[in-house]
Length: 303
Image 1 (cartoon, helix red, strand yellow):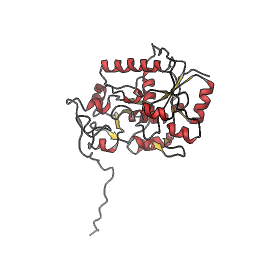
Image 2 (cartoon, rainbow, N blue to C red):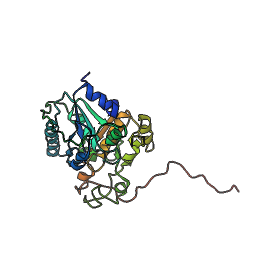
Image 3 (cartoon, helix red, strand yellow):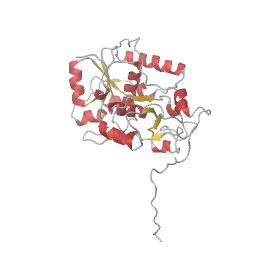
Image 4 (cartoon, helix red, strand yellow):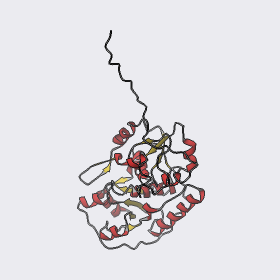
């Protein structure tokens, strides 16, 4: 089987496709849920790496170097040498805040050649009637490959500040209470010091890129993803800068947009957790104002 980099359109994998992949080539299956949930039942052979979801990063040079070295160590420890396909999964696509997609985004940034995400997560695996294990897996450590070329998908707060007021689309995908400034984060209303959003940002809540199925929530089709973006005037030819609170929900959207053919998509991984802590950076608060795109016809009767 080819070892060429995985195309964005084939990142999502179904439970039966995952089974076939495991039978045909080396796979490191990474469960991103918490350790207790993992212990209650997981896909056979999966290793547990909760840090995929929990690690909070900053976009300073030191912060990005720490992010790179931390995950090179973690991913090597679970067995990624560059030869294996990494497959991430979470419990369900609407309940894990995009944690499996965060693994995909990080490995994309690090330049790892073969990365997939289980569409529908563990819920889809169980719905397909496939086996579940409660046996903890001890990873076989490997040396994560050095010398990989990082992909141009990571933004700093300086990049985002420079984009304010330009044609670049700043896309906020957080939950509605964060978008309107009622809450600062999913960790609690006052977890971060400021509430609000990036000035001029557009909003498409991350849930909107998924749809129900018999196996639980799954990603919408490329056409459906493009239609969701079109509701906010966003097209595949735009430059799109994504953000959420810490780069998990935005990773879910990053994957959705890439599979839908958006070419110039990058993410501010530090997101609101970083931006809100720098008082020098501007924010918008309160309910956003919307300029009408149509004119109310006059109802006055002709004289």
